[in-house]
Length: 275
Image 1 (cartoon, one colour):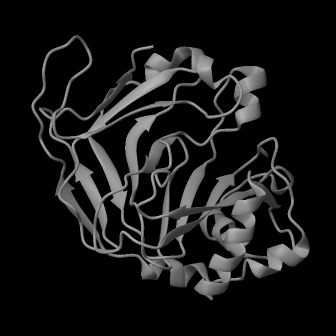
Image 2 (image 1 turned 180 degrees about the vertical axis):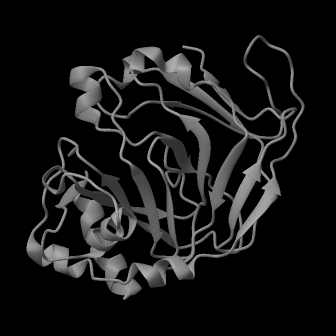
């Protein structure tokens, strides 16, 4: 089943952009299963709710393997109304066991792009998820996330993921419906099997790097440090620039899922980047 899904995801990735599966729509596929699993028992408007989904295919070890850190948002709401609207939940389903792990950190986005400073501050915890075929990860749709290319035993091959955002009472703009024929190729996998396939969660401490007192922006000599903007689309040059610094733990085992705790004296945090 995973091999067929991976083939379909290569087609979806080539289409570029995200697709929409309304709540209760047919034919049912993996996106439908994810939505149903994570909304069971919830009250919401079925007519305005559904799953936004897309695929990512990245070659492990390639210079473009990394997925920029970002918050999932309705980009049209940002551009036209100046407000950040997030999905209720974001999910990642790994269809291969190779490539960069996903890093999710406890920094929520600001309500409006103009108030980006509200998103800045120290980071105390995060989740580092190494790919494993069939593994499914779900997290708060307001959290900052991206990938961290790291050398390891599964650093070669294609990293293929199926991403689903669960939206309740809001449909993000710009999402399209794919043909029923393609939707059928995206399977009807039992999500219970997906969840069971994930590796047990282990707790680790993030590396504790030296910190200098340069205003409100700690420095680190042994950490992941990236500068990113809100989005890569139109107007990106005017979007707020953020600087993420997180000391990383030692390389984890294949398929591991690690809850990272950063001590107060570490350099972990999200700060404003220089223009």
